Image (tube, rainbow, N blue to C red):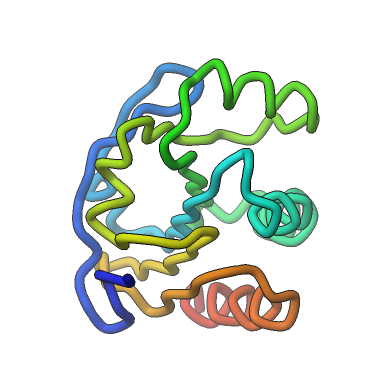
Length: 146
């Protein structure tokens, strides 16, 4: 079900963000990107997202070389808007209502994380949420940023 493995080039895509802006993954070359696929109905995704503000956004705040890119899989802007409001999330989120971006990376299962290096290569691909694995992913991001 994982179509993009560590060591391979990350497929480029255009994403519309919750705020209406759009950009391509390719435009982020030179930065380390954490691409995260999630959905509002997914329990493990919600658990993982609850750690994101403190452990990802706050931790790497001010590091211009890092981008956290959470992409909502298969849900409407309205569904994501209601979820953001309920949870109090204000960080940027991408929308993938037709799963076009997701299908470039996987055929099934979320949450999924892909750590992508400055050259667009995937250095880590993970499925599901596990606290220890999440901690290891943070270490991988830090190492990739060095």
